[in-house]
Each structure stands twice: as structure tokens, then as C-alpha cells.
Image 1 (cartoon, helix red, strand yellow):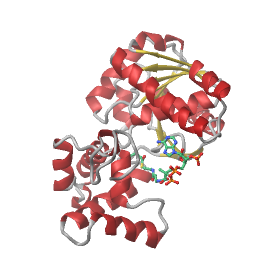
Image 2 (spheres, protein in one colour):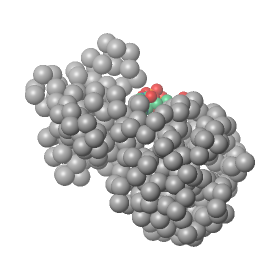
Image 3 (cartoon, rainbow, N blue to C red):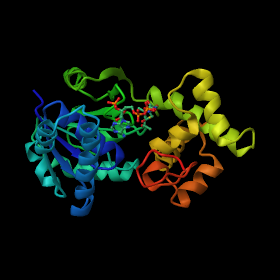
Image 4 (cartoon, rainbow, N blue to C red):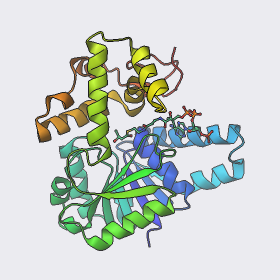
Length: 290
Ligand code: 3HC
């Protein structure tokens, strides 16, 4: 039974994943690379729960209980007590491999090692550990507290009981799990990122303004938001990295990172989280376009 989970990396996705676990009643060990980043992660959780309190969807006692289930810190050694550890660090294979190699020497033998990678190979990440059969993908979608989907990604080395255990855990979290194979971008991102890259190219080529491209897809096709707004929500750095992984895996030019995307990332315009992306926001992390 998974009761204590570790979350490594407390950026947009990691902080959202912490919230999902803590709301479902699990104890959470939340770790990032420095005390400052851990504190920022705590701030994300408190802000998100604060919004629910101000809307009257959560009372203050319940909020305090949820926050009380999470310990924040900057030392991976805290993962020794975890039943499952999930990492949500930047989308770079070498960073993820190094974390998994370190975790190997810290966690219990029966601890599940999960990655929230958007597109990298679970098999390659698993190879960085001594027990690759306990490594699995558990891919949440942004915003993690809201989006129901969790892709449970098995590698050819994953233990079958592990797949079932993680699928059941996702259901306990109130999520909709789908079990998928280890292919670049899995199911959702393989399809979505190709659409996003094409939308960015449509903007780049001057086909229409960014708001008209977004309106065409939101108002015309019934999507909750247009593609350029969605890129800003997910993070332009994340989209850029996933494009790179998909392009390397498939050679399909339609998924290569578009020039304007690369320029925005180089300029530090990463979307909502930095206050600028395709649009400009009235505060870092805010959702209001100015
Ligand atoms: N954290 C927590 N809750 C959030 C949130 C966040 N970041 N953003 C919105 N919410 C909550 C709001 O509090 C609100 O909750 P309530 O209904 O209980 O009051 C609810 O979500 C709806 O939010 P809003 O009323 O502010 O706005 P919208 O109705 O426009 O919904 C949205 C916002 C949920 C982001 C919606 O526009 C949406 O679903 N957009 C598409 C998102 C999407 O496609 N995500 C997948 C991206 S791909 C991905 O993540 C994969 C990765 O690997 C790249």
C-alpha cells in the first residue's frame, strides 16, 4: 500500500503533484534543490489552496490539514521513508538519470521509482538504477490538480504488478489512468505537441494573429483554450524540450522546435510562470493576460 510519497522538483508540475497527493490524504516528502526552491514550492501549494479557500471550496482547517501532510526540504535522504518517489525535474535525461542513481542508494528495496517525464524514455531512465523493474512513468497533466489524466507508462523492464499498483494509486487520487507503452511523447504529448508546433508555425508565418489562432481552436473546435495560450500554460521551455525529444525520435520536421519558440526560450520568456510567453501576464504565475 502506498501511503508516503516523495516528490522531487517543486516547479509548476511538481507543486501541483504535491497538492494532488496531499489532498488525497497521503503523506508527502517534497524536495527541491535548495531551501529557497523548497520554500517556493510550499508557497505554490499555499497559494493554490488559498484560492480554493477564498472561493469557499475548502475551509481553513482542511487547508491546514493538507499543508500539514507535506514536509518540505532540500535533502534527497528524506526519501528513505517513501513508498513511491516521483520526480518532476526539468526534462533533461542526464538530470533525471543522476537523480535516479542517487535514489537507488537511499530508498527502500520495495519503493516504486516514478518519473513525470513528458516524453523521455522510461527504459533509459530505468537503466540508471540497479533495479529497473521498479521504474515506471506516472505522467500528470498541467494543471495537475485539475486535469484528470495520468499516463502510466511501462518500460519493457517494468514489473507488471507495479503497473497495476500505480494505476490503482492514480484512481485513489481521483484521476483517470491510461496504461501506455514507452514511445516518445507516449500518447497525449505525441499527438498534442505536433499540433502545438504546427500552431506556432502558423503564427510565425503570419497566417493569423496569436489571439485569432487561439480563438479559431477554442471557439471553433471546443477546446478549453487555444494552442498558444496552452503553450504559455505548459511552459515554453517544456514544449521546446518535448519537440526536441520527438524530433530526435521520429525525424518528423513538423515536431522540430519552431524558430520563434527557440527565441522565446532563449530570451527567458517561458510563458505564465515567467510572466511572458506568447502573451504577457500581469504577474509571474498569474493567468491574466494584459
Ligand atoms: N492549479 C490548481 N487549480 C487550478 C489551476 C492551477 N494551476 N488553474 C485552474 N485551476 C482550477 C481553478 O481554481 C478552477 O477551480 P474551481 O472550478 O474549483 O473553481 C478550475 O481549475 C477552472 O479554472 P478557471 O475557472 O480559472 O479557468 P478555466 O475554466 O478556463 O480552466 C484550465 C482553466 C483548467 C487550465 C482549462 O482552461 C483547461 O483545461 N485548459 C487546457 C489545459 C490542458 O490542455 N492541459 C494539458 C497540457 S499538456 C501537459 O500538461 C503535458 C505536459 O507533459 C506537457
